[in-house]
Image (cartoon, rainbow, N blue to C red; front, side, top):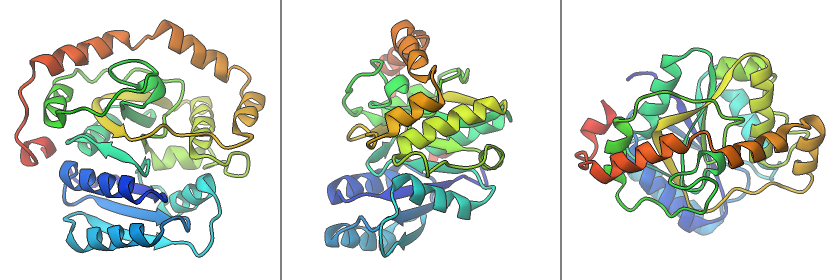
Length: 277
């Protein structure tokens, strides 16, 4: 596939997590993909060395920018998305661990349905998009190539989610503009700002969906900042009841079971080439 989405990766202070994330990107992402590392004055000397080394040797197309002072997580991501204009962008968590084939599968999700505004892959720590257990602290997959093979065999249904989840989300650029962009003035964390964006997108008729053919792991759960939970509850009074209802009813249970069965019977795909066709 051509015209792959831009990968936007906010750099955090954890150099170990950053190193693991960049290594996973190299192993799981087509060489022509563009990766923009944005640093909100978070990277210390060790992280800076990790980034310098990675840029020198990666086959991806990297860029790195660093602010001289921090403006906050959601504001920094909003600033970068504004620069990306109408391009489709994947925002990855700084400790994300993608499984091979992830980017092409997300792009294919958008191509299947022009009404999709956000696409969220499975994750071990994906809250409503968690696999294999809903809302649980699942471990990272120990056989990513086997999981990639199973994911490719899943039928692309793309069920509705109440909102996108912050471990990884593909944003349709024109949908983001129509919804008015990221409300970083009301929310400090990207998780809360993304939930708010998802709900506004739904109001404009865009869909927030699960891309059940892709998986992006994560090393730790995302966190809301002080005041974010209250701000969401005030603006969207039915938000938390909807999330609770989904956690109780688990409408994605059948898909979780289906993926688990496919993983159990899958043969690992060869690395690199076949994963990116």
